[in-house]
Amino acid sequence: MRIGIAGCAGRMGRMLLQTVLATDGASLAGGIDRPGHGAVGVDLGTLAGTSAVGVVAGDDPAALFAASDVVIDFTAPASVLEHARLAAEQATALVVGTTGLEAVHRDALAHAGRTVPVVVAANMSVGVTLLLGLTRRVAELLGPDYDIEIVEMHHRHKVDAPSGTALALGNAAAEGRGVALADAAVRVRDGQTGPRPAGAIGFATLRGGDVVGEHTVIFAAEGERIELTHRASSRTVFARGAVRAALWCAGRPPGVYSMRDVLGLE
Image (cartoon, rainbow, N blue to C red):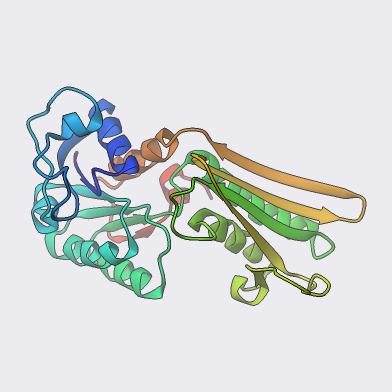
């Protein structure tokens, strides 16, 4: 399957290049980054830290989608709009791991999903996909006597907060409770906040160093606390999951899918 990488010169993009080159059944169709980036014109194998593969990084999204069976996108929300449009126009499947998406981006992906398979996940790792399911189930079983807090930490360069994974965990907890996250979320605490609101789902965001990603969902009650934690020590877990999702798209009908679909989880 011919896989293209959007944002190929970034930390995640280079890891995706490495993973595609090392995966049976996958071939590297191309890679793009923003116009003027120093990586444009550089061999993708060189960017991946391996030997040259004879394909250089470009800056034309339309050309990448035309050359690919599926494109993996870990870029920025603004780019997702164009990539969703191109996926539909070129009949190219799309895997999106970009975080910070808003309603306009999700609408664009839903539109593309009428034409091609689109996999969207705030976190592509198998472990986090399982954590989402556990969070939903535990929130359902424990009930309102347990306060829910979500703590996440990432490297100093991350630009969105809370992380997309933290928000996905919040949504999973809210689904388990049968409420809307928008009605329950407490994303900022500062000064005299007063007692914790009943039923709140709190978020705490930490940034520093080179932390790849750590997420903990805390269920705290009188006399006990349950914590569900996932720690990523390498971006390879996200890259492997994204390439797995890309290969899974082969022969799938149009639609918007999640990593739960990719893993076959109910």
